[in-house]
Length: 609
Image 1 (cartoon, rainbow, N blue to C red):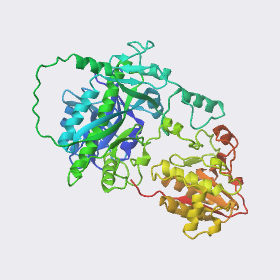
Image 2: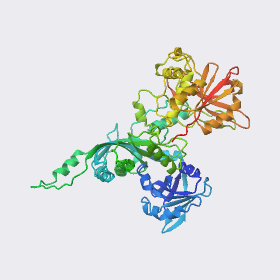
Image 3: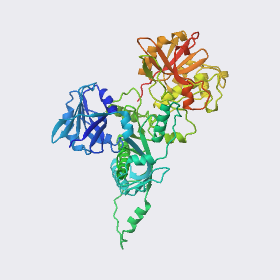
């Protein structure tokens, strides 16, 4: 019986954007009573090379090779078909997708059955269903690797380490619970042989929201739902189960004691190369259908660690082969990324002493962009792009509210279209961080919000500038006198553009509007800005500064409303208050002063990858 075929809506959007004739491989999850969910793809990194075995280690465990994709009239697909078919393990019926360039019209799906292709229908799995039906696991553990600094020795020792991982001695623990998972299954009386992952999720401690509370019943329902689901990554709606890893010492002791003590032991050893100790801090992920039986969890977690170790091995071997003199081994580290276009996590192993702008790192990321058909005009896999796990944020002393516009009611513009900020940002406003800036610091706060957008999108890993640092920089470039430093003087859009260039190397476009009554005339320009750049916009007029994070604009009628993030708010970081009172909300033309001129600072995305 052929599998039931489902395709992620995220994947279909990515397929639609491919404009070049090429072929690639598909990755998916086989679950339930015979359902294949296709989640991702990559295209050949160079002509005739798919490199899927290496790329597979970047995906969470349980995401495996499942077929081939062909774009346009590419002839490579037929050449790769037999190779891919023989490598697919999760199903006896690999899939072939045939896509036209730049469109989903005419998309055909076929299963390979008894040496022939058989067309089959498919069902689209939308984002909400993905979030409801699947979850991820994330674990952290450490190993010490002793190896000589050669590719051969490294591969040998890593193979030994993976065998140790898979020998059944590891034990997994769910934090803040008494739930343990061993090679014999979950060690908790509440679980039976029929228990499923969804039963585990029901027992996890509920997490407080990091974005505050909303007021309306609809928002409260969503908030309650989010708290009951263990959302653990900023900007991601999947539930993530965190686990600790321990090792059973009693198992090892039993094994040692069972060995007889020889009367005489002779050991002949060849002269070995000197070894180095390499600490490996592993962070591994897996994807699981919530209907998966708990008895399978242990094997999946072990495979997730093995994938992370293979990724370390790839990264270290690449470095050794690229180093002219063999090179000294550097410490690898796991990084998880969640590109919004993907709808799933992707992992990379970076060597700690190689900075993001190192030529070899630039080349690796450029290759990744090419393999996953991503533009090289924006960053996806820089260290600053790594997932922000909520348990890490909770350990931070203070973090501003994130994306305060989410959950707002529609603006009410008839036949309007919303053009919104693209990505995450933090809401900065008066009196935060014990800074008494009420009455003068609104533009400083708008600048901090804009800087947070660039940091959260991975363009920089710099810290958010303080009021004093902003003033010191403007004095340093001779824009302000020495008396400005430490003062309560205002700044405007021009100063903001200077600071963005100085702190983040970001250029800005300055737009002048003669009066508040004329702001409707630039609605189309703002809409284009949010479509192409997606950055927050600072607007200053008279003595006030605000941040525009979207517009709702009807081309036919010319009606427009502006989504405003108001830095003049002085209360606590409570989302309900901020939304109800309009500190983050839609504003009409009557919001603006008709007697004041306005300057807009519109930051431009740097070309960076």
